[in-house]
Image (cartoon, helix red, strand yellow):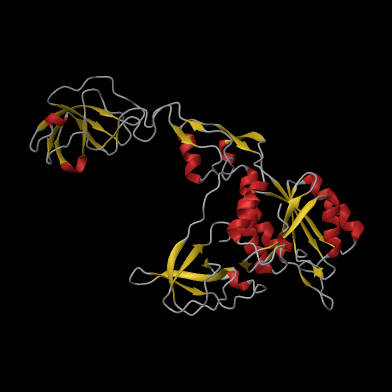
Length: 411
């Protein structure tokens, strides 16, 4: 691996991600879960349908099933039966006949169209057609949604609410998924306190573990929080050893810039192989990645916005791969900025913005307040990143920029 800290300049984000993706492998541990517990889980096997959906031609409307050739305006037909969903009719429908049919009812043999009841009039069992019928009108054809033998969902897909319903329609009661991965969170520093504790001079409340944990839980990662560990070599060694034994991934924040957090670096270098990166992104230049004996290690910057941006843009895609999920690109759109945005070339900026569509349909975006790496409110009040490419300079009002709407992990 390239020692990024010895290379002049900074590593571009795209180059870093390409290298990092090569360094992690997808876990292959499978387990079977009930369908009702499968939401958000990652499929371990392709899902192949064993049946047609719908299984037979059925009515999309309440109305009358008839022969298309008998459906001219003014035609009178004798209603000979009624068909309800789940109760198919066995008799054949002849010329001059129709059947009353409800939504979902199976189309009887001899019928090839359904006219809505609103387009008919009835007197006893005599039905008059008031609007000419089209062939196949209001019929859901057998297999028009899914055909037997069709690959419906691919392994590596994170199951959505719609996917759960789709699998239920195929009769799936249990699903084979990848086992959830586990992440250990470690906060280090004598200056940190948990919310609710009293602060002494020079101390402040730890927030990164809470934001990181919240994102990981949205990602369906099991979280083990080891809490705040003081700057003590023996205690740090013990905690990192425990974390490595219990988790697939160990995550810390702070202490990943050159010259910082000597104890943490000593422990990491003693237990595993860690590389410290200087990335050409803002916020979030310092980032550490490596291997402990049994787990991967991610070292996020200490500033809260830097920690969130590097977690979301760097660690999350890697965690998805480790968990077995198929990679997909984030949604990015073009928008017009409503204000001047200052920037120096050299790093890719992930500024926090608010986008909206104006009365003309134009997508516009503005900054969400001050953009310092310690101003967490800039993330909380935003709904997107404004992504300014590495070599781009200051953006003037009315210029086009790239935005990335916040996904479900940040909203």
